[in-house]
Length: 559
Image 1 (cartoon, rainbow, N blue to C red):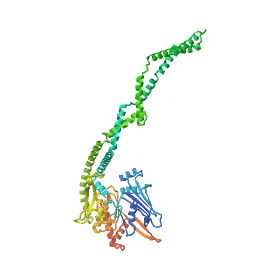
Image 2: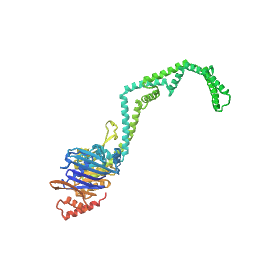
Image 3: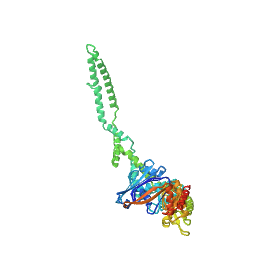
């Protein structure tokens, strides 16, 4: 709810700082005193249109700050969190307007687009007046109010989600149909490429194994020659390593005396002679068993050639062929009978439409039931507001060609007939400003228990009424205030006497400058103001007594 409003150098207000409480707050004062300053300032804080004329004469800029407690407004908390503008339970909207007409917007101290101020402001406050802030002329507001009244916001959200899934599938199908020739050409190419890769059937690591085998087979003669020579050098040649080691051992064995320091050396030579002899035997066996296989070499080289050729064809390395094979196979499966095929997309679209139709059907039925009850209850409130002949109709208009829409299968519009026998028409075409305010009041009273907008502002909803009807308006506003927060500008004492908080607006002149002053009244001040509203400038004892009685009665009212 709104907790504080600070206005600097706006219109004729030099500096106004107001604290607001929960409940009904009335703004009263003489005509021209500046009662509209508060509402206009709030409108600007919520992103309304601004011009240089809003800046007080002689000032460089107007500065308006509205502070809200959003602890009980989950939609606003979520919005702030999504835009990374959250600041505990406080939400501060600020608007600065320069004398050249330019303006800047801030949310919790951070500069922001004006559109963000409007979007967030719509979650915090709804201004019902004859001006541009009025939401009751918008069909989306009608739908929102009806769905809240029916308690079907979750069903409406589910329907919107189902519509989105259907819409996305339809777009994919349309694109698939529009690109049918391109897709078919792609399918033919994929089939050919995948068949080639299937025939190649390259396995992971196969290329490395083949290259190693090719290296060995292509050098078979060199391997045999070198192995044979090595065998000769180990044991079979006259100057073989084995014979030379044997000669070295003979020299050491013929020493005239035993030398202990050479014992380890003699042991090492004995072991070396054994190892060289074994190595020679191994080499001889290898040479005897080794066979060059030209046919296998040709087979390996042919296989490698096929691998290299396939890699060059796709302009990748041979190592990338298995990954390419898997990717092309997956794309082929998707286009040819998979999730991306025409048949699959058509089946999915039909499934999505059926899911949407089921939810939208439930939504329509719930709206139809709620519309009947809403119309009856609003008619009752309108009768109390001296508008018994006004017929209120919640009209459900079926979408053309039964096309799905995010909000379901129908548009919602509030219609009224101002006179018996006249067809019901849209609010904008039928209701006058005063009538529209009272119709709005009746609607808000009915949906107050379910509305998610915490602060409601009514600008002169009592225009053209008086007497008992004015008292009813006051009771209705007090009822709304008991469930949330209501601000109203009024000229009727019957309304002002019932508010929880009373702000008095006055203006004065000082040094050839005009100033507007807004002050919160205590009980005595409220009685005096009600008396002024009853009797004008000259207040008699009877007027004051009447005002005191009206105030006591209004404050004793509980709805």
